[in-house]
Image: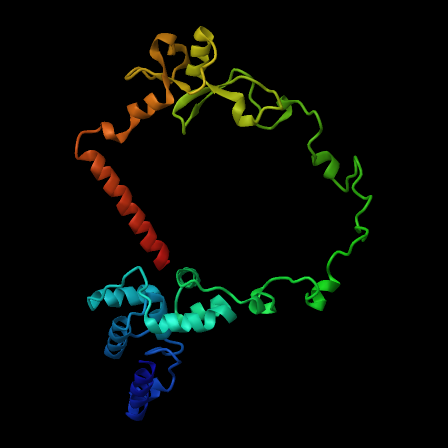
Length: 310
C-alpha cells in the first residue's frame, strides 16, 4: 500500500503545473503540505479504504497518513468504515512479534506495527513470548546491572561510607532568614490558627448533606474528625455509642438541617445492610433499574471512546 501511495504521489509530480508544485512540497505523509492546513483528497479516501481493508487500526493509519486520529475517524464515518476497538492480529504481525520480541525493545515493535505498547505486551503474553536473558542483561532492557553500570552513573552514585554534605547542619532550632517566624510552633494552641472556630460551631456538610458540629480541639485528632453529625450526637446522648455495623439516619420524610429541631424521635438506628436496601435503585419500579444500568454502561463506553480518541 505504501508503494502504491508513493507511485500515485509520483504521478502527481509528473503531471506538472500547479499540482506538481504542490506535490513537490509534500512530506512523507499522503496529501500533506508543509506550512498549510491538512487537505483531504479523493486519493486519501482510497488510501484510507485500503488500509482499513488490510485490518490496520486508527493509530497506524493516522501515523501513516500524518494526521490526527480524529481526522481518520471523521472521514471513516463519511465513507461508512467502522473500526473495531479490538485489534485483529494477522499471521504476518504474529510472525513479526515472534521474531523481534525476544531481543528488541517492545516500544520499537509497537511503533513499527502502529499499535499501543500495551497491546503488544498483551499479545506477547498470549503467545507465550519472553525476553531473552541476553536482552535483559543488556543496556537496551533499561535495567541497572551490578558491575555493568555506565561509568558516568557510577561516578555520581553514593558510595558506602560517604559523609553527606549537610551532615550536622539541620540541628534543633536551626533556621535561616524568616524561617523561624513562619514555622509552626510545637504545642501551638488550636485557637491561634487563622481559620479557627470554637467548639460547638455548626456547619453544613455538602457531601453528607447533614449538619455537623465541632466537638474537640484535640491536636491529636485529625481536623476532619473533630466534627460530628448533629443527629448522631443526639442519638448517642439518649442511647449511648452507635453499635458497630450500624448507622443513625432520619426517618423517612423527617430529615431537617436545623439542629434545634433534631430530636431522638426523628431518628432511626439501622444496620448498614438495611440502609443499603432502603437506598438501592432496585426499589424503583421497572424498567427504571435497567435504564440506570444501561446509562452506566453507555457512559463507560463513551468515556472509553473519548479517552482513546484524546
